[in-house]
Image 1: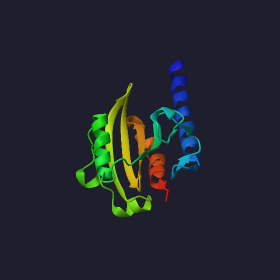
Image 2: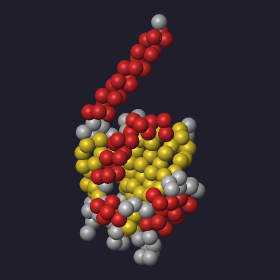
Image 3: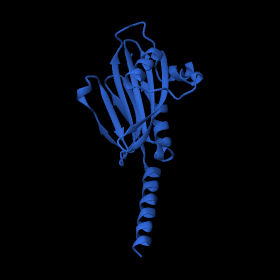
Length: 176
């Protein structure tokens, strides 16, 4: 009997989570560092002042998915988005799992995001007991580069891919 109730509880939680995910309304976050994006209204916001650059992260209620944005100054005017991405991957000691022909987004996508240059990576990492899939996108405009990071527990990708995709597609650099 306890086993049946436990399964019913688990099913109820899954149904409630599905209903919650389906009812999440997208809101727009705007930052004075020159970017904006849409996020689900049931995700929580945080920032970490210790990183020394403007940043913001929205996380799902269960913590299994997150979307974070960091803004950095361009210290080297000749640096490209691909060079910045490769440096980031080197610092993380990670390897890009994307095929080479998918690392540089189409120019129309880069321009639609308000950038002049862009590069993306997908890496796999371990955070505690969780296997994570992490998407990194670097967009360059003027004297800044904008890095947004999508992270999700690999076992939860299906449940969060829609929201993370909407967040990424809505990301825009608004700085002049």
